[in-house]
Length: 178
Image (cartoon, rainbow, N blue to C red; front, side, top):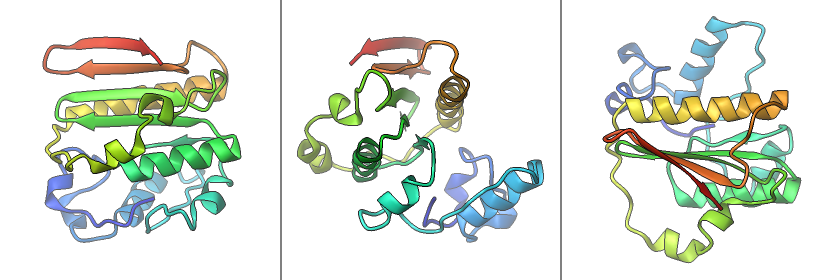
């Protein structure tokens, strides 16, 4: 789900796209690329933003939500909709060379609002720089994928009620109880 088009600044961190796809709709390019990897996978793409008006309808169709968004309003909307519909929410966020991952609304009952309870304060923050090194979403997204596989297959220890962080400048990682 994305309303954006492929831009040159995406190419170093979003590996689904090529220069030949500049100015094309992101979800259509991603759909084409992922379908080429495995035609048996059923992919639904949504070339628009998640909104209060469409969140319930879209999220209700799925067993869990994996977040790759880049803004606080969408994260709060995903969280609140997942809580309302009883869906697990695999969260990931990046900034520069730092990443974080958690699993919300699962057995511990912890939600995104437990991590960031003051929505007004978060929304009042100035926008963060979009400067991201390509390795940061790769590492963070891989950890999110691992959490999804553990959640689906029912093995391992989930980041349920915990926040995993990494600083790729120092390779320091932490797991913080929420």
